[in-house]
Length: 303
Length: 303
Image (cartoon, rainbow over all chains, first blue to last red; front, side, top):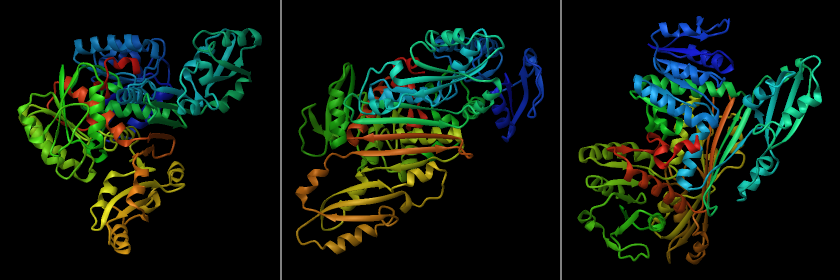
């Protein structure tokens, strides 16, 4: 019986718990959280008590500010799988995890979600066979990172941000255009609930001028009541990776449409966690560095 | 300087030769053929003389009847990469190649084309993260295997066969339908040039009743002059792999559109041949069994 644990219990953590609970030959030993939570799927323990347990794999969910620090501690004691998704910090994080994992004889699978994750694999493959960088579009869908960036603004009670490909932009890439700017590829639509007494204009200005996150895009800001944000709870997402050789002779596209981003991400995490529990490897690996056959009992069925 | 050779010099062989010729740090030592051919890209030698050369990797192109026997001899002496594409014989072929490659300390990359190849990888990945078999559609495009099957019929001078997805079938799968028959997924359109004196009706009957290849499909047979087949020389192809979880919440699609099937296949072959020349591995591997990072200098750029 393989013993798994989940650290962090947000949307992805819950979806992972449900999946692990429904699997044979797997024991979900516990959910480890710093918060005072309950779970229908497994006992809940304080996060720090995890080091008292003997476990096969820890799934460290999410990309909260401190997930990298926590994961680095965990990988010294266990095999880990995570869906860390801050692209800009990925290289440094993987290097740290790789060093620690090797020092302690463990395996870390890093960025096992859809992007980074499945999309990383597609970008790497498409470049590998065409020699040209692939183009990525995200949406229409909810970006957790951008929603969170709005929530951190003073005066904001809650927020949901939709990333939406610009009409016609995907067709322009298909026709072979290059060099589209951020603004020409995506727009951003925000639904923001303010705290009592907050200033709309000040919040709007802080959103649209935020470097990297919003400044390079056309941004629509809609102020709504907190109650209205419940209509945006589903967290759908979508995206497409477009590969094309220099002559435009060969075109590859991977597209993804998700009714629930956490649901799909948990599927990726749990699949790779099961694989990790069977592998005899040490070090940290992203999805393009692992053969997809590790997910399967009989890969030849799919060749 | 890595030394490569090409065995077999059809459309894929030529496209591979051109690619290798244009690469730095690569020497295309020769083209080895049983036929009396010339090449603008490298010296041509009799096929059997290949064993006199010291080479890094042999690219054995195509899936002719004897390619498996030839490849099994080659892998005892060299690393090999091929785009063998007879799905039904794949498992046995890989097992044989794996045993021989390991016995002789070589690496064989098998089925490095688009299907088997890139599509195998997608099918394996989509099943791996959804737990449900993906659906494959081929076309619209020219199937070499089906064209060749027609050419072997007595009285046929030359032939080209187009595989075409049935209108609306891809949409039915997207809506969650399952259990579509072969006939409901694809139709087959043939352009056939007859030898002088051949009987149209007899040839048509032999085509439409051919087991596996044509009998399970609606088939359109068009008889044309040999000259007219030149209009069908481009060999475009296309296809789509559709993955979907049990609840229909997550949908993944990999689609491919190729103006020239041999051109794209040669890109895959040469990419994996370059990777093979750098890897320190023995045995036979299909694409889902290899990390895509072997194609790249710096995988983290794509994560």
